[in-house]
Image 1 (spheres, rainbow, N blue to C red):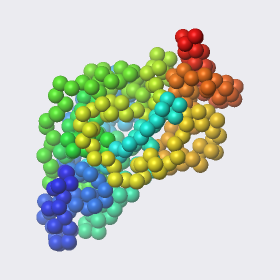
Image 2 (cartoon, helix red, strand yellow; image 1 turned 180 degrees about the vertical axis):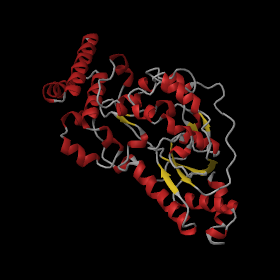
Image 3 (cartoon, rainbow, N blue to C red; image 1 turned 120 degrees about the vertical axis):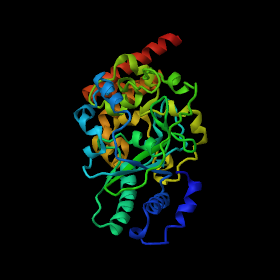
Length: 368
């Protein structure tokens, strides 16, 4: 649901008590309140079997989820939203835009747009969703509702498409004509029977393959299929306790945490209006040089990144990523920092620092 449609919904906001509204009026009131809370897209889908469930099972069987074992362990729960909340009848799907301008260089190390602010989107969205749930419970005290922000075994993307929020891009992300793809998805599962919106049936990617062609680690196994084991976001965020495969390190380039490449090249993101949430702004947190992670203590890391997306990945993995970024720069000014990490760092960081020093040495030989 786009902003232009919300004014009509707002006419219902004070017209009646929620419990007196028709199902259609209740749905409109929910959408108006969601827009007021900062959600840019809102739609409703019925509780049903996800359309891509068979694809998910095949993807898991092919091992493309890598070390994200929680996905295979919860495989059966994805079969229906009742695996998350048995009483569910409807799903309210919502998006929040996080698009922002950020600048960086190979020495700084790039951080994915969604993580450049000082607030973890889980916390921000969950608090807003709870406001919606309180509204429902005040009107329907016996109703059952559950807030979902990215952590439950629910294929939010499937239900967002069913709710009319967008289509699946070839990079596997949900795309909306007006919002692009730089948005978070969240949902509310409810036992209330709400009228469903029309699914988004049409893809608007056409013959474009820019997202697939731009990936430096060849993480796409064709359109609509991402091999997470090669994805820069997976390698720098999810693969926290292991070495990043040598053959993928140069492709990481200067990405310190996450990656936006397949979104940056998408034509639909030229239309993205940008976020209105100051918490998602890179200006809300002092930039961090990649080299700082090599020298940062655990206590310094916790103080600086507590409550941000970087906290979950942890200092050691980010120091490993930083060593790879510095190695990819080929700049000899980082040799002393890498040598210090080689002698004092965790084993994971030592190995990455050794590799980085070799890359810098090779770069210097090529220049001479």
